[in-house]
Image 1 (cartoon, one colour):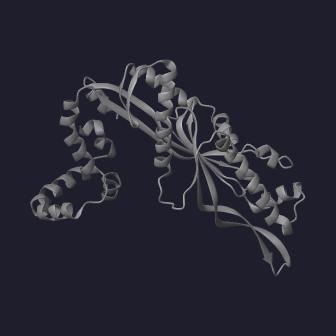
Image 2: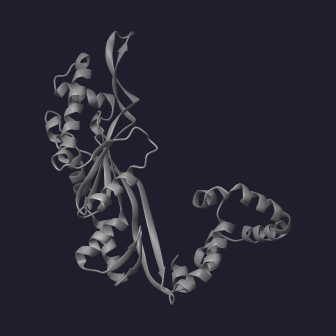
Image 3: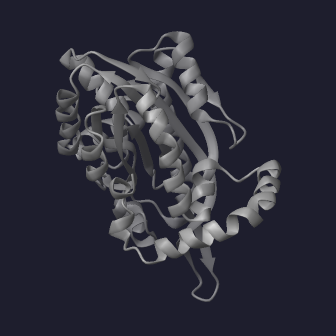
Length: 327
């Protein structure tokens, strides 16, 4: 990529490199296994025969506390019966309709698979045992216009062990940074076609790497479950944060459309001749029936040329196939 940018630097208006989509998972590790959950029950004087009653009561308290903020501010709370419904589209539609620029947008409820605990009667040992099982429970999805991070969502599992997932976007975050810095820009979806000072924008984006993630994510977790400390007063536990998905994107903006228009066929050809078939389908989607028929009709004329191209690439090292050297 560095070679590509250097080769076309006279036509490039700006470059942005940084976080795109980020997904974090919060886990209460000490109670995420059966023995650890037994320690919690012991600390709260809960016998296994009373397990169901106890966890149901705690779950109801968590739901009420998590939804209280939406109820107090009259934000929508909506149950989604289908897993195929796009939660983000619903949330963005509500934000647009209600002109939400900061704060809670809505809370969406959905029943989804989860890992949780159940009591098992061990007939051989003649005793009750706690087991971790795959079941389904209610998840609460909170959507916000975060003052620092922009549009994001976080969800919490309403059954023990109350796992959390937070999804945010580095470009959303950058837009908020530029707003605070008074840096003018134009935005289209997740891209910035124009920024007044690209170098300053990159410096702002570089600060994202230095974020205090436990503090930032911990504040979001507190909003998901305001009674966390109360629930775990007798057996204190804290969330352990891990990265589930991390995307790093490099945006290259050309100053003139015709330059990119001329370069685009070469970019496309490079991708088609170097990517694996499965990867091409992931990017462009599977070919239609008409495209397959056209490909079959042209296969005879192009087979010899394709063989030559494949032989040529077979003798190249991965470094020689880099974008900058090819284009």
